[in-house]
Length: 582
Ligand code: ADP
Ligand code: MG
Image (tube, rainbow, N blue to C red; front, side, top):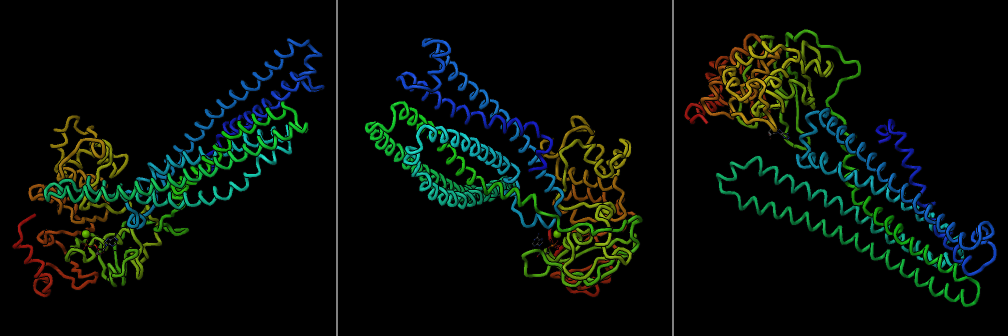
């Protein structure tokens, strides 16, 4: 936060300057009124008398009225400017915070996102940032009204120290319950936040699964689940508002009590002649004026606490550090590795008991095509994840040319691999830019050549603006097969020495599948390729197949060898041969 403000020094200075003016003006107004009343009642000395001596009686009234007006005006103008400043500061803060959050998210490594619900992350970027804005505004208001309170309090004290004591005797008493209630509000606000993003997750899930929900007529069940989450959310919200309102009531009662005390004690003092009517009137005016600021301090303080959960959430997100990082002095990975090896690699996902990979060892030479087979959940994707260092192994090592992968610069490792996964991804950009992400600086011809090689060129030309059609989130929708072939084109353009194909065709219908398959084949060429295929027939061409079972490597060999030797492989194969392609 401090960093963010460094270049906003002038704005901050203006904010502080205009913060002090309203309290001073409030103080001046009270004192001027007392002078005026004193003068009107003929009390000797004072400002009014001085004005009378200066300019005569009628003009003196105008002079005093003028001073009063000036004090009011200056206070109001300063107040106006203060609010404008405040909004500008808050904008800088909010925008800067959002940008930093998004950058932070993008720099975090893959394991972080296993632990987060999407609703939570979205909520952080959208809502928590806005609520942080409100928290900052509330904090500023606590400060401003605090100053105003001090100013008015000083004026009241000036008029009558003794009455001030009576009037404000309740304040320290009021502070205690207010502080206690503020803590409860903060606790509640965590619950509100949590139930809020649970609700959000339900909605996200609905959007993602809308086809399935419809097909299985699951609307009723989903609606019921949302309503349950919604009810929890609103219950928490109501409870929070209740606590907040209650502390308001406590504050107001105590303030009212103060006024009653002043009326009683003040009235008796005037009757006994200890206090002038002017003093009592000015004093009551000060007490009455004080109501607003004190109430504001209290309300904004509670509000600050209410949004505390959001602020803390943002702070923890900003403090999160990627788990997979470069070692200090990490070495460059210049040439593609000629040998890739797993050395007794063990891995389990955070919070999981069962290891996803349990001691896997194998070695691959550059240019080989390696198939990975195994039932679903056997650890195929996990193996690929470790191969490119999306995760670090829990035990053992992944080796490039005999050197631990963790010794290399992460960016160099990522540069060496192209990935096509089950869920193809489109950036929100034009078709051309989407493919060009494979290699920045590639010419338009190279982009088109890649699209041709991926058998998607013709379809791209049929789009409304051809290669310049915006696709991805917010752009035009494409079919699963087209999307996947654009991903393949991107991988072709990247021309990386290591290629990872993780069930690249499994989410497609059989026609799109064979098209994508056709696109992928030239890509495999003489690269080191790891291919996980749900269709075992695509593994026939592999030089070797790694067969996984529950995170263990149970057999290695060519398709023919495994068919001859492994019962498990035969079983997977027979399920495949009879199952319809889907
Ligand atoms: P495959 O790709 O062979 O279907 P995976 O490698 O995706 O299998 O998963 C291996 C095991 O690890 C499975 O038991 C799966 O439930 C678990 N797993 C996969 N991803 C995660 C994750 N992000 N968090 C926790 N467990 C996971
Ligand atoms: Mg998988």
